[in-house]
Image 1: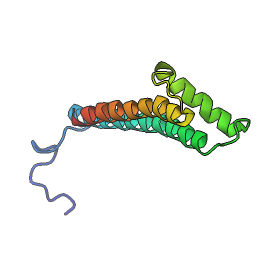
Image 2: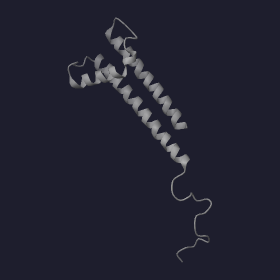
Image 3: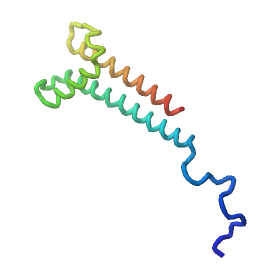
Image 4: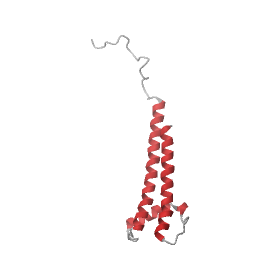
Length: 118
């Protein structure tokens, strides 16, 4: 008594053999894309925030790591350089690099939320 099924073969309620449903695949792809966008936005904001922190704490500008973080932050915030021209250098760095960090977070998380709902 190896087969107790009265009707052998696929049933109407069974998924068709072979590839998974397209909807599930599309939903999985949308979630992965949303996660990638979310992660990229977070990484960009971390580099900008790290540069602000290193600058405000007076990190050695000649250090290789500090130069790398500064170069990456400059590359990420090229479009917002010198929007704010304050007399206080620390406040100027905070605003000129903090604004793009905030925008990257808001836009990246907004796009990721929209993609994950799709």
